[in-house]
Image (cartoon, rainbow, N blue to C red; front, side):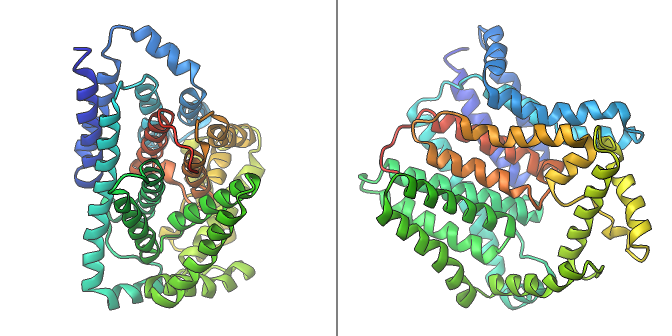
Length: 406
């Protein structure tokens, strides 16, 4: 059984990836099977001790336990239970990944290639659809919409997968740059960067450019000025090129520029998705101000927010009365200032985890952390799963690699 364990876990991780793209049921079932299989070894006690020994594991589980505790002062128990069900991967996946899966280099090579392959296939699929209806979709971008993507058209979460594929492809290139097929990773890297700008999902773009900025700072600290200038050139030239060459990106930026006037005046516009999000963040901050110590309780956030909307924006449509559109603000509104402090510590904890080559790891964790400024990915099934999967897959993989070219 112990000899078969790495192969079983390898197959289940591929099933997890397939579930993301093809079936929520497969995703749920394979997650449960992966957890059980991870615990099926001769030293389960050591497995749990390793969980508590690794700050990344028990730290991530706090993102489950803090909202869980807030249920004691949440009046809407049904809503609280529903939100906690979505957050279960924050408890289960850190426990599953705490113990090394025992993969060989060949396992890791194939696993990462398959993960990137799934993202590549999904990207090509959506690009084909976009190319067939490009005029229609480009106009939709002026209304805040997007073209079809995997993950049930969740373009925000898929953009984070594309961001991860960019980092993984770059990491693979640097590890194998002397290999005769190293150019394949460069080709994939360029493709994913282009696709990310055609998709023009701001969450993925923000993660990408923040990670590039982090790389730039890293290079200057290492006195690698020539490479730093090349990275600076990329930070400037890529968005400029996208503005002139990519209609969807251009229209997304035009929409953002148009809606900036509503940001400045704070007025409600039902046709403005971004203004609705800004107002929702104000609602969350108001809830935090009213309940700074313990928050409203995770189950009562939406009801309390709706009360604020009706009081301050009586003409607001019911469908625009949404959760605060920032994971930081939402966590603060539900669990108070202590909860917000713990949330921030958990997100920034990975930066202090030692890696032989910290750059790609820090690019991943910075991209995930910055995405929550204007998104609530930890409140949806795909978002919670992807946070844990990308984080812990990167952790288990990258801590076993060693490169010196970065």
